[in-house]
Length: 462
Image 1 (cartoon, helix red, strand yellow):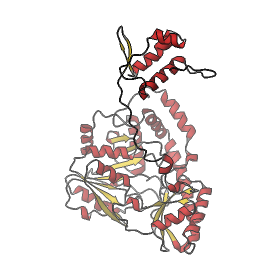
Image 2 (image 1 turned 120 degrees about the vertical axis):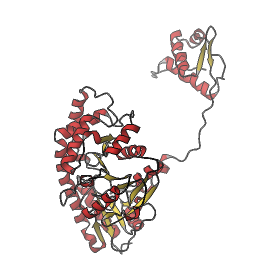
Image 3 (image 1 turned 45 degrees about the horizontal axis):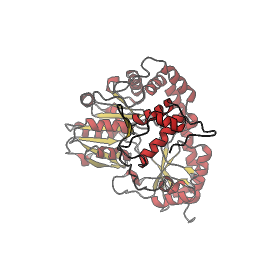
């Protein structure tokens, strides 16, 4: 039985008829193979026009619920019942339990939203929307103009020796690592710093490459255990090791480069993820700028320097790997919006990026200084380790508290901090180290969070 809308219900009549017939078919009330009333009969029965019924029947036919048979009418199609899988639990039940009661979140990764150049970016997007090709796809490596602008910036700021032809623009670091993994030979093993940006080793492992840890000391990654290996890629963060915050000195850099040059197929991925933000000295020259054997793959991103939502990263490929990329990746489209690429190109060309970086270095330097000042009441019970760089502090408890206890006490006082152990392949050899991200927090939140941590972590309070 079909019931037409009444009263203030403005649902179109054909849509109301269509929905009720569809429900009857899906529930089995209208059996497969059964014939629907003719359009005229249905129109007469409901007191509507034939065109209204025709609209409902036409929609059912276009979706495959009924079929029209010449000079016969409309018949219900056979459709299997949709099986309902057992629920894995409501979303609210699956949400992290720690989400409740968190007043200050020191999880690393955020940036200062209030300092984003919204007006500049909006203007550039509007202007670029009018450019020829703004609605077209770019080539796989990315917009040529953007690649030229990035190459100019890297040469000036990081000493990277590259041409626009060597650059590949990708939708974030993970996307570029997928691309790199795709063009590497299957037998090429991957060694990753331990600890490391943890999605890197998971990504390479899922792509089928043998993955092994490369241990680090206070000077960075140690390559001696990798001597004698076959084809290998070494993933490292030499300028600001993540998550420990160390910087690789020149002697160790030369040793790593010599290791790469001694093998037939050895390459280094230099992930320079936040090199723009160093607060006590000029940024350390890139590993790629020292390389003379064309063995360094340089990786950088605008997610840290501009905004995480701007999923634009870049990779500089040495000539041999560039040839592999063009052979194996030909025909793949770019994963980055053309409009965003054009806007970012102009952001770089017109000097807005340099202005933004200079402003943010001062801003984040002051945030870091405030964090350290606010943690001073802990005195000899806590210390910051690593370089004065980036958007987070790595801190170590000196009062005997372990990582789990630091996190538990912080959470009990309404603060979330990031444990360091998930960044290790295997067991974490360090005790009492956690990460405190400050990039997305205002001064009041930093003061409040540090006061809570001081109360939480002072030995004798629990």
